[in-house]
Image 1 (cartoon, rainbow, N blue to C red):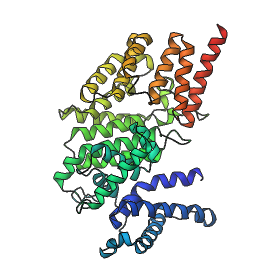
Image 2: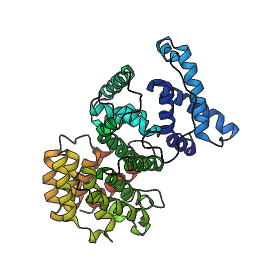
Image 3: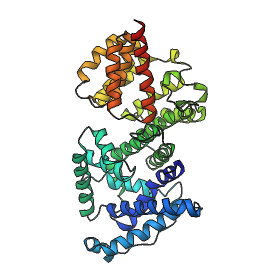
Length: 411
């Protein structure tokens, strides 16, 4: 598949799946119909040329495929007894907040139905809206793929069996599900910013879609500081996109990025949103994370970064979300303040919980390099390689291994 086709399918998948789910009121039918449309596009577009409106083409083709599938399936015969509405024009960028007309946001609220366990909500949103594979999602949850497949199947059945699952949620229901929907938007951006698999490290279309949805949430809930903070956080991150990959296509660590390439307009917007969020008096996780991102964004250089402030922010975040990953990030900040030996010691209690988390081993390898323990560093980096890094991460880790091997040869 060409890069353009992959990018096009990735860009339009969230809106297409959301519109198809609205029409067929069945997530499985929507997924199968969209997959059929993409397969047909792989054959038709290279020969006939890309359509003027790829999304409209995919929607029309998927709708026809879905209707054919429904007609042939006795199991889904009940769907035919319902009114299958015609496709309406795609919604405008700023929907009517009272009607919740944005299909993607509506689908996220469906995935966050209160009948589902929160882990199931996240899993089904990652599968349906983002199109991640079961293996990729299972890796993020640190469970076996078969376990995750069963969880997603169970969640779909629960949604399908609920008679009101596909209705537009009431204002009270929106508020109740808001936290979970915000998590989905954050995860959508994270998957775009650092893809879990494939040759690309960044999928900007996913990042931009997440930012669009974050803007919608901020508009729908203007008094909620966490919504402004979520948008702020995403913009702070997105502002660094041009500096994150160098001219040779290699990953550039934050310390080594050319800060002149950072988008100062987005940083300014993000700063204003963070200040707005802080004025609400809320003290949620997104406000803290946005404050961490702001500290990096406003430092003129690595040497000017206020690591003590960042460490204190992570301590506050850990009090709200006492997870191993948050603790690992706090230790990374402590390494800047107290050195690699302190950080390595602090990481020891996390070893079991994060045994399959490649960033744990990558960080440990880097700290071991700093201490001069290159044999142990190589072992840590080899563990990263065994945990399925992306292509660009593999290149970066290979270079680190070569540095340690060269240091050992000089001894």
